[in-house]
Image (cartoon, rainbow, N blue to C red; front, side):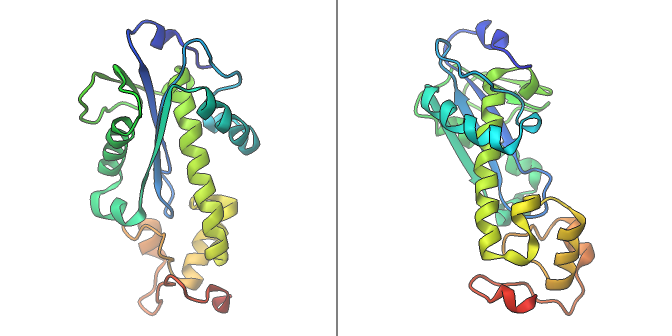
Length: 213
């Protein structure tokens, strides 16, 4: 379980940084940064991947209310295609820290790479299982992205985004094969490119997606 020992060894406001959505072939990448209050740490924070959706959404307002500062940055599928996922992740992490309402003295980054920053940054492999600040960021990033994908399920119901959140589930891949990609699919992903035939046309914004069922 994550704790606050890494943060306690550092001086000043410490922000944890994590992302959600590197792997899916549809939807945005969401990156969160959180500065927790050392004297007001919510109970139950853990690696977002080990929590249920219900637990994550229950913790989200507790983290936002108790944190000294938090931010969530969204990187669109088009920008991911333009930059590549690694560059998009690094850019999102930098932006998330820069948009905090309180200047952090150090940034704890989940993973093994740190983006360019104006403050000292420390990469921590599996950081969401070690640092409460990173775990809190992982929850905010995940809930923000899940909320977007649930909303996208209303706009593009043929893909089942509410269920798989844009990951490469078999039903999702089959939906791309049958209906073509939506505007929120990542066209640079092999998963998308490999299932498309030349005759398919993408579903456009405002189009009648139900007509393709």
